[in-house]
Image 1 (cartoon, rainbow, N blue to C red):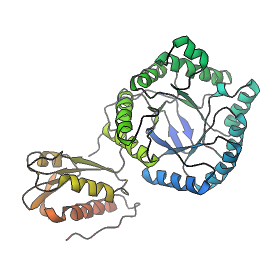
Image 2 (image 1 turned 90 degrees about the vertical axis):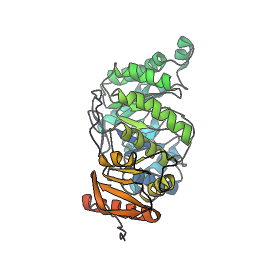
Image 3 (image 1 turned 45 degrees about the vertical axis):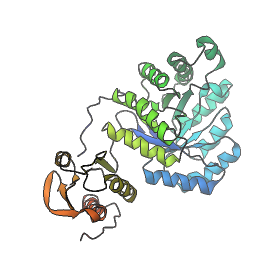
Image 4 (image 1 turned 90 degrees about the horizontal axis):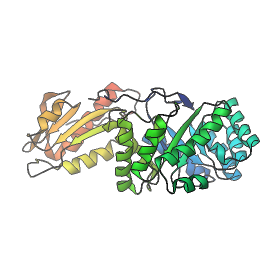
Length: 372
């Protein structure tokens, strides 16, 4: 039973990335980035659609060359998710993707070069209502800042970010968001805390180059969780050396745990012990895989015995409590007369969940299995 988060979020200016509001109290947007060759239009479109199905609100695409910009034009025509173009240094690419319908430019103004080039990009962004993301990374700070601080520090990251912010301020452009990412949790968290006090624009959170699926998820959950719990952050990306779809899933799991957003089923499951009356681990794994298509928020408790099962079931939308051969079934905290045979529990619970989702959200195309 999803309840409102006790977190008081940092006030921020709202910008629009396509049709997705970012900042100003809007739901925290979950982003990811394609890892296909952008010039492989078919593969990139397919990956964007997979990310959309996983729940991504925004997708970033790297556009390093003019050939990639031409491919971006075709990609833009085939997908409806908001797209961010990741561009470094070449202002002409930024102008081209702005022409082709990009929803946000990830480009640091100070890296473009001459004043007239910066102004050309900002004018194009202003004319087409395209926001900019300033993206600072602890691994690529300006040479003079590296020399000044000796090593990446929160102050160094923020000084770099503010250089780019000052350029946009001077050009009277306020439609931007900022990130100050680092692979070290404390470095990133410290930088975001400092930056949050200096600007009113939305902040894009990330622990960059976090690692593989398991270690990167843990590092991201710790770092982003610290910031989100303090109310800092308006959009996020979990950076994993893994399938980008996993980034989206982990991002939503982080937001779910803080009650900031809810999408799909939140499984509450015991770690198992000798008291379990059915295979809890196998049941949860099977249901997670089978019910990936469900987007309606539901809390489902799967507990292997009667010690903790009834208590968890009382505060869940649906719950199963293990017992000898036949397990108890709860809905909205109420013990139901019917019971599930432990050998058929997965099929029976899936059918119950799908039937409920179909009733509550007719917009979802749910195939309902019969319940024996």
